[in-house]
Image 1: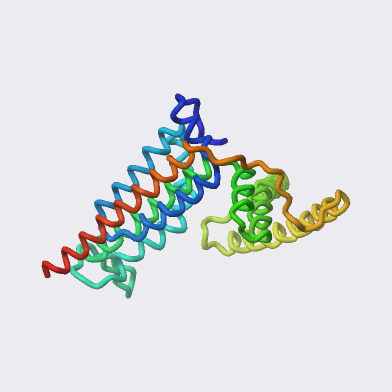
Image 2: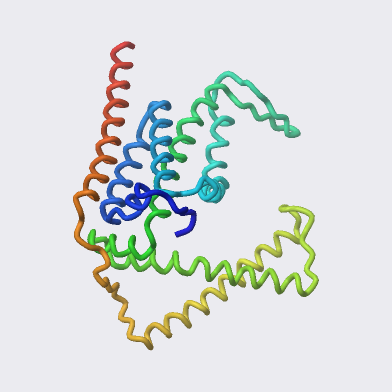
Length: 267
């Protein structure tokens, strides 16, 4: 598994926890954590997940690389909040006839979704880094998830690398033919190149999918997900790990709910 280093027995034990228990515990932990209203408690849950990840042997470099993948999506959304929230302006940006103002209330409002996104990211990074794809799909099958959903997850994850390899070959072929990129992202030549690349990538991916599907049919594929019994009997240590994570998440949630009710009474 990528991002995993050789660690003492504690890390090996955490990685060996039954995938079904791990998935249920992590999902409940993320749901409880991302519904918290107190920023201090949210930060506490983030540090707890970070500590568990480090104990499990996940390297900080691996976590940073994973975080860099979601920043273009979640980061853009969070960065808009300070500009659209009304309040006391603390910084202004003049763009010709338009004036953008960052408010103090906007910065405070952006902290909460940012911490929620970070907590959810750490939880999913821990789960995916300590559990292989095969373990997760077999766990989903034992948890009675819809077969079509399991197949979609399995094929999507497996063929992301194939599509990326195809994209790299296309870029190499362009460079071999003397391709010169545009001056910037909004350059007409750049936009045209990106559009043609995406269209060609879609066509090649579609054709490859057809070939893969025909090859699977020739090998006896029937459209059903077959489980080979990879998930074994759940051990007491596995249940202890899951119970500990769920108990901690609910304890923090109850503290958060109690704090909210206390603040309402004070008002």
